Length: 362
Length: 229
Image 1 (cartoon, each protein chain N blue to C red):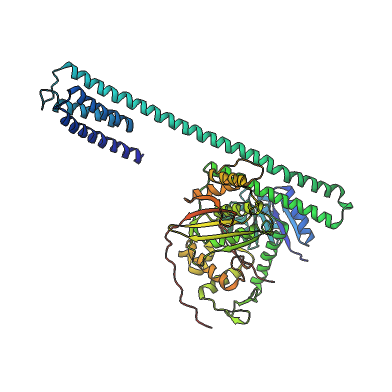
Image 2: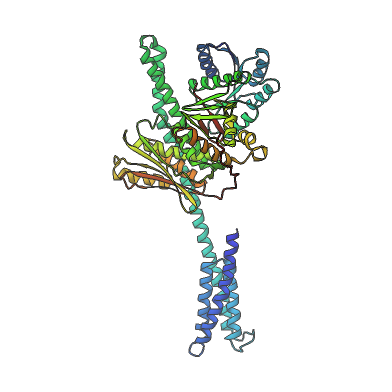
């Protein structure tokens, strides 16, 4: 609203400046040109103001122009009298043109807004259907495993060795965990999309977030070599720690899923001007250029297309969380040939804290 | 084998079933309550050693069940909560719960929490405040610490923080509780103090501070101190 008011104010100033400019031009033209041509110059100013601003400034420009024209150019000069019917007609047409153009511009603006709303609705719908596709695809496999493994335990458990029984039970457990993670992600994306998440921000140490993610993904990352590089003086950030943990977890999980076992995954954070940048980098040349492009596109658009895996979902969630915090998330080709996923979190000034005297040796 | 009695307040029969099976196998006696009202009554009549309370009960709020139990009993209470509900977890802990576990959970994890809660109760009655965290040993009574053969210098605040966590060994302690205990109630919201001092403690105590084994972060809730047996 403040911006609209500001814009209207600028519009009135433009109307005044435009009229002044036309008056100067008109005064210069007067010795050699007909009055009708001078009127045309004023008309041009009115048209421009009507195109760029709202109806108010356009009408203001029209009235100012007509007044200036009448006062300075139409004889008798220095007075608001109109002797000639011709000029009266010129004035009427000027005002009419201001009105018509303003209306047209306004209508175009409305149409553009409606179009934008439609696009947002279509985007929401697209995300919703992609979520549904993702649910049905990514839940079917674990459900099939769970049904199969548990039924063989229930129906023929006594004919299996203890090791086989344990392996089947373990896979039921693992798949249930997997499914639970996935359901949580879908719910989270739905909440993020609906704008239903209220950030509970508190001072957070990013190294703690990294540690929690590493602990949470221990099994998933077991086959990878995870290198953590965090500067000792990394400042605290005021964020919703649970959500940022989720964002980072999605990036790491994504790397673990799409790079071969034994490869390195690097987690880094660095302080920059006004923010902290977190990077999750892999060194797998396993992805083709086309796949990389697709990955980047998913991350940049925050789309959840291609539900073959929930990669799109994970990246889209990461991006939505980072945006909620006022940061940016993007992906780029890493110098080592792999992929670097990065996000930033804005820094805030930290309140004071009591320094403790150095410990006394006991 | 233990002979402790565990009260399970949970409306889902399938969850009660596997909890009972697991507790039976470990030698616990189990009392099941299918709703909150029943749970409060059973807590009074069976006098269990510990209660497990689901926060998503159909009849009354699980947090109210905890409050009712706390009116007369200090028995350990562990709540079962849904994921991503940090505020509910904190509310339950503030109402008097001793720990929480997030659904879905593995039984191993739950049994570890139950053992920690029961042990803490025993320790409150007994004494013996020697903490072993890897190669670090902390004598809470004599306020002395060592790592390997080297004496370990802890600042008074680091020591207080560690002692507060050790009072609830194996159990979660909320930010608010830690801040009030260590810095006083006026600092109950100064979470940044905690972030700074837990880092210092980890640097002194953990072999790999990035992958801490003893001082564990409970994101959005608080901290948990684990120790070697």
